[in-house]
Length: 253
Ligand code: PGA
Image (cartoon, rainbow, N blue to C red; front, side):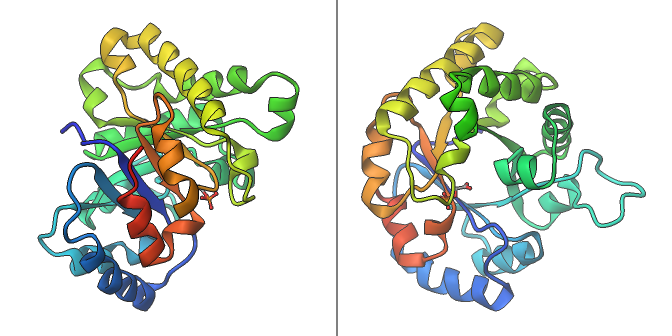
């Protein structure tokens, strides 16, 4: 199920409740009615997934995603979300290892790998998020950190599952800060990530879509999509507004 690019995914984080989810789609859907080429995905809070799926009905142009899953599909894990239930609720993809998960909730690289495995086992597309902090970048260790997250996160993936794997490069210093990586910064890291993927899986690895995320807005979306090797965008704050997010979805590099 290769997704057509550009892939523009919205990550609502802990924003938009159930009524707001309905209102968002009521406004957003007509704005993207003529959208062609490329893939649109939205990751609402887990509790709003079924509402989003009900509003979308049989409209399969927009994929839904969950923002995090647990590494097991069932069991005595109070309070966690199962990738299998997310799929049942209408999700097609799962974000894994978002920097807020890593930095606020202490998720480790190997745990992210297990979550990627769980997402794939549940039939979801896994979107593995990787990115360095400002300190790491300034210390000249950006790629070292990104590669460690990448290599550990993809370790449980089989070559036959590559059609359900996406990578999102999100420099932590650009998330929610208004400070965007330049298209050159994004292109440079995407190229390194692609080289690493190619070292693991050859041409098929090199062909995996890599999204950029971090302060993507209407004004910079086209420029970022034009950067070599940027196959899509992961959009946080700017995905909350239906008009703005629809404009980002139709941006072309
Ligand atoms: P932002 O968030 O667009 O608000 O910077 C991006 C993300 O965290 O995925």
